[in-house]
Amino acid sequence: MIYNQVTQKLHADEIILSALREDIPWEDVSANAVMPEGKRGKAELICKQDGVIAGLPVFARTFELLDEGAEVKCFVKDGDGVKAGQLLAEVYGDIRALLSGERTALNFLQRMSGIATYTRSVANCLEGTGTVLLDTRKTAPGLRIFEKYAVTVGGGQNHRFNLSDGVLLKDNHIGAAGGVKQAIAAARKYAPFVRKIEIEVETLEQLEEALAAGADIVMLDNMKGETLERAVRLAKGRAQTEVSGNVTKENIGRLASLGVDYISSGALTHSAPVLDVSLKNLRPL
Image (cartoon, rainbow, N blue to C red; front, side, top):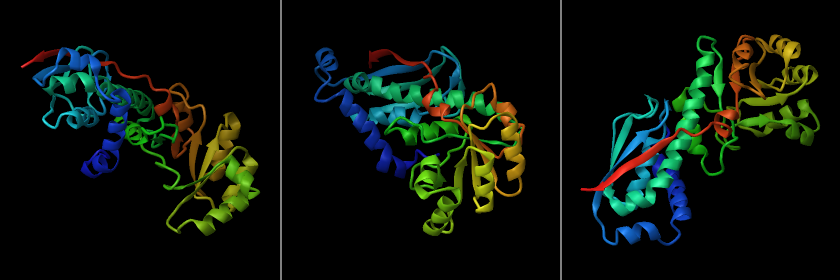
């Protein structure tokens, strides 16, 4: 699980605090109006549609950053399937913190759970195929660590986290270097020897050049039909294959049937609808 104590201190708290500052630039006028003094209260986290829950630690941490005495008692864990009407957790703390943190906490939880839910539905299409489902860097700015975590909760795996994480030579890298062969040679010379070299190819000619130059992974970008089938056969035993571009639940099974090693989909993060959850029944204790 990427949301551990070290991650929390280095990354998660900073992201959550930034979101809270955006929503509470100096005060929560509504909360302070109805609750001028601190008083402990309780609210219920209720699921409003079926799905996969993800982001409960982030949800809880949001309230903890507003009230160090806040406590979230969860009745489910990340990765669990949840049903509409199900009680997911109880939240205890200063009522002002519960009121002020509600929307930010829910925004994180709904978005992460939506990604996990959609990813699970796509990953189910690959069961038994041996093909690995990957995400991409098409994430909301500032939320990548949460969104990629949600993908793993849903049953997918992470592609590189950032530009420092691995070598992936795309069309513009190839153009800058002067060609496929030149781009691979430059990457091989510059990158540490432990790094694999992945390159995006759009034609069979580019694929042949990439294989001859010793690419470790070839990304078959937006290839279709017979061209894609030929590409997979050409690369077999010479490089690992990744299919990318216009991947949907409707076509992913057919793509996997070709024997590709990986299928990456930006839709896992950029197009997943949120899962509807709500914080209800707030009352003083």
